[in-house]
Amino acid sequence: METETRQPQPYRNPLAEPNWSGAEKEIARKVFQSALEKELQDTVNAARQKMAKITRASELWDLEDWLGRQRRQIDEKYDYRYSVLLMVFVRLIAEGRLSESDLDGLHSDKIDYIRRILSFAKR
Image 1 (cartoon, one colour):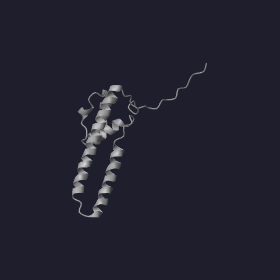
Image 2 (cartoon, one colour):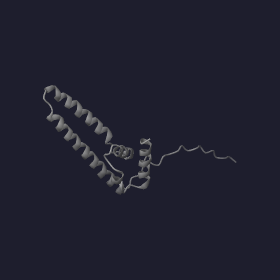
Image 3 (cartoon, one colour):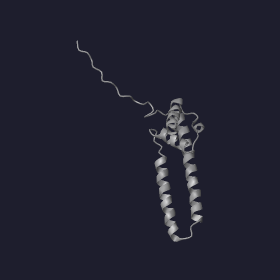
Image 4 (cartoon, helix red, strand yellow):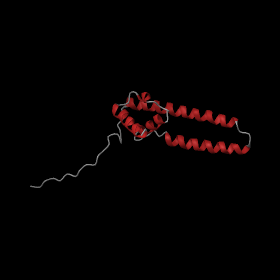
């Protein structure tokens, strides 16, 4: 009689590829879009302030450089792939762009995950 040898299974974090219900996707999309729109508006306002202070042509290129950096940072930060969305929310909360209450309606395992990551960031 031959015995079957089982290989140990690696630990799989269930939130590494979280499942998103339709309702959660709708909440996440609204929260994400709202935060993105606010950040873009903040950038527009800052650009207007910088533009108003320009007195020399060379300062235009400084503004262009600043806008390029802002765009790259925003593009990097706002990634709407479900596999990374919880970390996007962690970052936005840490930066003060979202609050935990903005995520009301997400499943408790996702909220708990966000809280755990935030608790490490505060250390």
